[in-house]
Each structure stands twice: as C-alpha cells, then as structure tokens.
Length: 483
Ligand SMILES: Nc1nc2c(ncn2[C@@H]2O[C@H](COP(=O)(O)OP(=O)(O)OP(=O)(O)O)[C@@H](O)[C@H]2O)c(=O)[nH]1
Image (cartoon, rainbow, N blue to C red):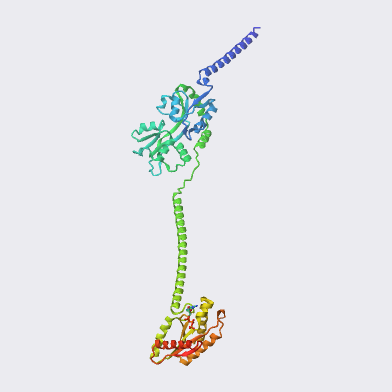
C-alpha cells in the first residue's frame, strides 16, 4: 500500500499539472485574443493606399492592384491577417483617412521624420530609385544639384517634397496632386522637371506613350518602402515584420519582375522617315500633277495645232478660191472679164510690137430669155454650164474662153487669123448642134469675129467683133459674121 500511494500521488500531481498547463494555455490564448486589436475587428486590418501610383499601388475598379497588393497578399498568407481596403481619392486623402482612424495602415511608403509623428514603420521590403524627368530638349542634369531655377514638379505629400525642403530649400517647386499630374505638367510645359519614382514614371510613360519625356538625372534618395502603421495599432508591427522576413528572395523577385518589367519599346524616331516619305509623296504628287498638266497642255497644244492647221488649210483653200474667183466666173468656171482684161493688155503690148496677131470671137446664145422663161432660171444656169464645157473642149490650148456676162462669151485667140477664128466658130456651132442639153433643150449661138488690125486698139477690135455679132443676130442668128 505504501508503495502504491506515491504512484497515485504522482499521477494526481501530473494530472493537475496538465490541467494547469491546459488552463494556462487557454488563458494565454484568451489574453492574446482579448488584448490584440485584431480581435475587435476579426483579424481585419483596414488600410489605405495611393490610388494612383502604379506600379506600386492603385485602385482599379475598386480593387487594390500593384506591388503593394501582391505584398499584402503574401503578408496575409504568412501572418494570418486579413486586409481590407478603405478606398480613397488621392494620397493626401489616404493620409487624412489614416489620421482620422478610418484606416489603420498604409502598405507602401517611405519613412520620414514627419510621418513618424503618427506612424510606426515596418522593415523595408521594397527599394526603388528616384529620377528627374524632362522633355527631350532639356540637357542631362545628372542630379538635383544642377536644376538651377528650373520649375520642378513634386507630388504633394510625397516624401520627396520633405527631402527638397530639407536639402534644396531654394528650389523652384510646383506642387502637383499625383505623379501623373507632374508628368503632364512637364508635357504641357508648366514645369521643366518632375521628380518621382523610376518605376512609376516608367509605367506612366509606357502607358500613355509620352516618349517625348526622358530621364534627365538621378535623385540621390531612393525609395525604401515599408508598411506604415498608425501608432494606435503598432502592436501588429512585430507580426508584420515576421511576415516580411518570411518573404523569400524568389517571391520578392517574382513581384519585382511582375511589375517592373515593362515591354521594351524600340523607340525608333520615325519623324525623319515620315518627313522623307511625306516629301517624297509630295514630290510624286507634284510630278503626277505636273505630268497630268503637261499632258493636258500638250493635248490642248495638239488640238490648237490641229485647229491652226485646219484654219491654215481653210485659209489656203479660201485664198485659192478667192484667187480662182478673181480670175473665173463662179457659175461656168470659165475665165472672167477681169482675167480677160489683164491678159489682153499683155497681148496687146506684144501685138503693138508687131510680134503677134490675134482674133476675138464674141459668142451669144440665141433666144436665151425664152429658155429661162420656159424652163426656169436654174435650167438656164445648167445650159450656161454645159455651153461653157463645149467652149472649153473646142478652143485650143492657147485660146482663152471668157464669160463676158449674162449669156455672152468672148474667146481670145492668139496668133489666129480671122479665117481660123471663123473655123473655130463653126466647130463650136457644130458641137452645140450635136449636144443634148438639159431638159432636151436645143439651142444655137451667134458669133461675131474680128481680127486685130495693125496698131488697132483692143477696144476698137472688140467693138468690131461686137458689131459683127449684132449683124449675125440681125441676119437671123445661128451664124458667124466677120467684123
Ligand atoms: N439663167 C440665167 N439667165 C441669165 C443669166 N444672165 C443673163 N440671163 C438671162 O439671159 C437673157 C438675155 O436675154 P436677151 O438679152 O433678151 O437676149 P436673148 O433672149 O438671148 O435674145 P437674143 O440675144 O436677141 O437672141 C435674160 O433673160 C437674162 O435674164 C444667168 O446667169 N443665168
């Protein structure tokens, strides 16, 4: 029995110890749950972010995205915390929400002396350089030391403003609402430079195609980004740091790559190419227009030349016709009185030198008025033309048959005696008698013949021939009389 008691006592003591240990564990857990600020909010940590600071963080369609979103997810997995986003309009608004207790922490920001007044910070979990950005025409300034009086855009509430006030109080700063507003200020020329985080600037330039901007220098300060927790909730910092420390290099690298590896745009300056192409196009268009205009003018010229050629031909024909008409009778196409006078003046001069003799024959159609009256004037015209043809056929080559006027014709017969002229009259009369005229009209002609006498005036010779014709008419027509 004495040996059995100590064993029982040992078992009882052990059981009591176990109970005590279990109770203490329960008590400790309960204490933790009751004393931690998480217990009140079901492990939920309300946080605010900069809604426009990609790739670090932003609110897109009410959802927290960016580097801090990925880190919060990892920290949530590793710490058991739940994070709940309290939406804000801007970074300044986020700071206000934090200070009025609406949110408990800011997941990604730099530590500054000013912020330490209301925040406590975790360990650094992300670093990035800050740069100066300008338009391309600005020289490379290298650092803040060389900005001179250039207007430098800085986002309000960012740590860089604090840095500038501390180390570059004379700098000419322009406060802007956000990094995007700062970049736009440089684009618009409202600021010469913008200072901001390399990754977010790079992101914005890529997103908006602001390729006229360039990095104009490095700012000595780099962003050392941490979680900032409101002082009232600083008790969670050890757990947050634990979770941050548990993030592996591979996880850091994955987040870095996921958000900073921008598609590398081979920025080729196509401006000269476009200018060249535009110039070439302009030249081609001008050449086409010039070619078109040349062809148009060439065609017009051709047309004008053709018209000119036609006019010239018409003029030539008109001159020819005029010349013909000046020497010929338009109805019968025999020589006219004008030609007769000219030719006979020359013949007379020759005859006066005793070189040549000539004879004149005056021919007149008998009763021509009756033909006109009976058959019409156009029938009379046809008869005149047909008689002219007979005269042309019957006279010799050197003879000149002329329509003197009306139904009267004169034939000049050079080197012809009166007898030869009379013989010609007989041939003509015979041809008329044997010819079938239009409308089967029969007709005859009377002839007056005169041979030029020595030194006789042409007009006198003509009068003799005319008188001889008169005699022929008086004697009954259809005959030849010699004057
Ligand atoms: N169709 C036509 N008739 C003409 C032309 N020239 C003159 N005459 C006509 O010729 C006729 C001449 O008539 P007259 O002088 O009386 O002579 P004729 O009738 O021939 O009589 P004789 O000479 O005496 O035999 C007139 O009726 C004129 O009108 C002409 O170009 N065409």
